[in-house]
Image: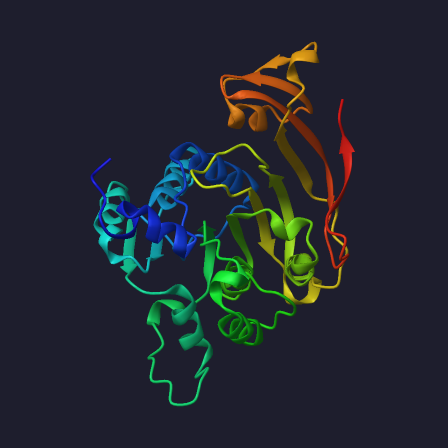
Length: 319
């Protein structure tokens, strides 16, 4: 990997901005799950967006997964990144793929979306970006994780009002709504985000929003697996944007997995071997596994996600 500049080379700034770059193996895992859930599309060019693309690891993983699945053709890729110092590396990753037209935008994604929604504030002078006049077929993302306390109450309230959210709002809640507004009905979202919204009272509004706006394909709680450098407990969400007429329909229960470390591993018998944490998830069979990183417990079931303030419930299969 080339030497990085800007935010990526400044850990303190990254922490303050809630930025945790996606490890390549996790990026490919998400891309494979997303591509595996996608329906065949038409013959036209496919529009892809990463709203916080960093050095392009997620976009590269998605294009590679599409290529390996025999589904890479004419693609239009848009990457947005506030730290313009990393975009040269992003471009070098994307240019390896033929039939892909790429545009990288050094900007704040939320500002871009707001400008395309119309004048959000008095005296605003932002000009809507032409790339956001049309919706996207695929969005893949790992947005910043910034808590309300860091955002500040005034900014959090302003964002909540702009995007129709109630209660305490973390920045990734806003990203989930904002990216949804860019996806066409029937389009697909694969996103890595904090798992806090799954079980907290503050996540009630965003849980309801996701249930109303997506046919949820899969949710994976990655728990305390330490797949990121920072102490972030991540989750993966994969869904297909609902058609307008289907938003009140009850969908079939989506797949749900959660994986956490097992502290009492010495007393366990019949541990299954696995190459790593992502290898456990690929197997997808509930149980306890020994990996070089430690012992982990995988639980599988069906997700029950909605407006319940007590959070996510799942019908678990623990085998």
